[in-house]
Amino acid sequence: MASIKAISKGYFFGAMAVSAIHTVHSFEKLGLNTGEQWITPLAIDGLAFFALGLQSKKYSDDTNKIGLRLQIGAGIAQLVANVYAASSPGGMVLGLMVVGIYLLMEMIGPKIRTRVEVEAAAAKIEADAKAEADRAKRNEAARARRAAAKAPAKHATRTTSRGTKISAL
Image (cartoon, rainbow, N blue to C red; front, top):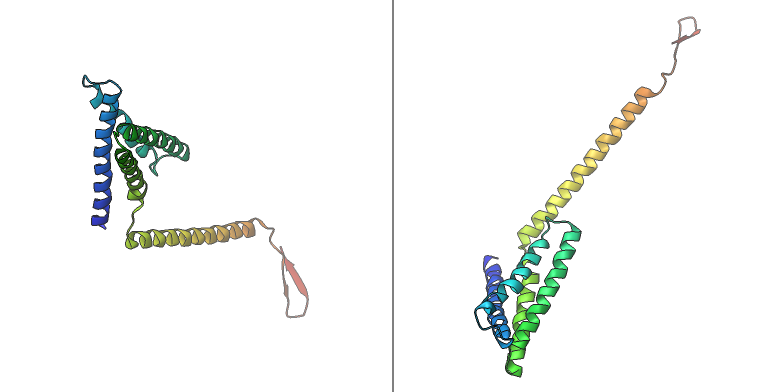
């Protein structure tokens, strides 16, 4: 498992490095040649990392959607920069491939789970469901006891040794 995650991270960071080089080259082609071109990968790739963080499970669905939109925007900017940096059709294909690998690893890397992790999560869900069912049974029994306590007491009747019925209040 660790080796698969390491390979995924390796591809991810390798693609990020190549993408950063292409982004710098793209902005050099646009006329930034005094050092500012080295800031551009931080802007684009930094936004992509920020967006990835916003898509964490600990944030709300609305925040996840904002992260996804930012991620798409950063991905498009990376794609444009990587293709524009190319000086040949092969370079364009390389740019597309690098961004594709980057996006693929970004999507599947966090979702890689071992069988043990999946089975443990399923067992926890099952245990939580059983605990909830037990809680519901206890609550129902408590409701029934409270309802019985609130109901008016029925009069008890008994028969004496002579056969007469006596009603007790």
